[in-house]
Length: 167
Image (tube, rainbow, N blue to C red; front, side, top):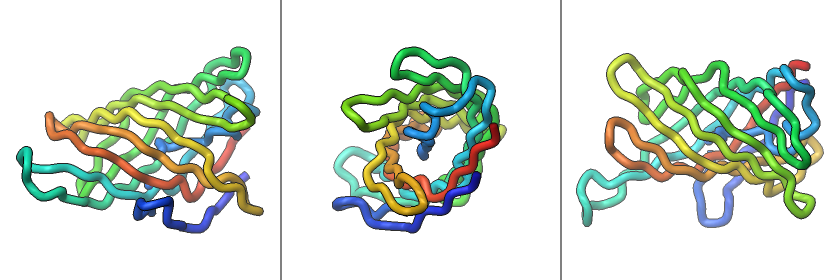
């Protein structure tokens, strides 16, 4: 199954990424070993070069595959098996990542932590994806998180636009 979701602006956020990312409510219905892929994630990362400096906004995009590892009551766990995160034109390959999704009060939330590298720099990302709008095509998910690239901190806002499930 492949689902395409239209780009929208989240409240006060120019969103076009993660999140990461992620497959939130759909993951909860998956079988162990199933592969889920966030095909199109787009957004922005924000940082300051020095405290007090102007905020710098850079484009961010990602693609991520996860494998379902277990089901617990109201919780599904998964691990990253492949992916790429591109920040301001520099691509990083995901080499490790773990997460879980849970359903809370009729709403699904997914959390993820992952590491990526471009052979020289290391990227560490932690974030949360929340379902915020249901459309005929599926559930639009907003990703919010933080990351560091070789010690430089960033805030991340993104939207999952296309995902696919391979049972």
